[in-house]
Length: 424
Image: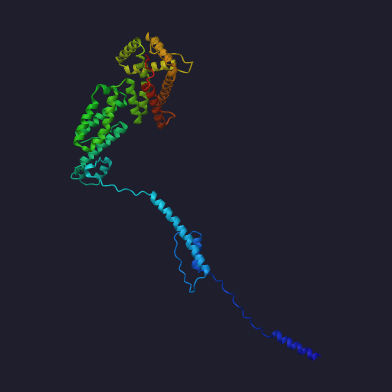
């Protein structure tokens, strides 16, 4: 038995130690796809809307497509065609909105008008030349090309630039000098006009023939230098308006000049004239109240005009008249009524009574005009005092706008409505 057991153990050991046979593994089948990697990427981009322009797919399969593949291809083509159709519709609509610019014909030389270029540019041109004595500028005129000496062209350009600056500022550069005597004469005349405008000396234009003299010189210059015509005409338009304004009633004349100076940015000059203008309208209107008031007012004006300090006397008279108006026609009950003249005069009561009768007679439809005019006097006084003392707390632009509003109110009350006109 022992020998048999040993034989069995020996057989078992041989079996366990024998080499195990290798098991051959079957490879997993590869996953197949209807599309190549390149086609799949293209399809993914199309489905996500990444490709706007459709490209026909290029299939390289050796076998014929199945029914499923044909269905996918047809669906792709349908989606792309739909997208392309929408794009085409949008492009057609856009084309209708886009206007094709019309080609402008080249202007004929006969219709061409040329104005001198700014003289600073001409100076730059000259600075690039070593010798300008023979330099020419080709000028395009209605008769064709004309050559002009560059030095002369510079002179004309400088003159035109001066006129444009004068039109907007009413000032002349004192350092300007011209070779042409008419240019210098024209400049000196304009400078004289400016001095009187800025000094608010408008009677100068009534007593002199300065405007007609400037216009005559301008005609000569326009005849000799065609390029200066537009600039001279602009200045002459303004001078003609001045000539027309000085022939009007005093307060209308002052209205014109205050508006003109405010437009040029000379606000202190403008508000000073407005301050006198408000009193002037009351004075001239009060002359129509009665024969007595007209006589007394005119006598007083003639009297102060003979004084050496007539300007100061006029200012005092205008202040007295405005104080009279604002204390007699106001919503403030506490104000003490002041007299018309700055001194004791028999016409003070006469003018006061006549003015109050006019106020009461027109109380129903003109009461607000009196109060509005009184408020206008107060507003102008505040602005003028502010400007005269350094313009504290005000911005230039705001004051200019305020002056425009004041002028509009005065034009409505005094010129359009003429609310102090005596009612028959």
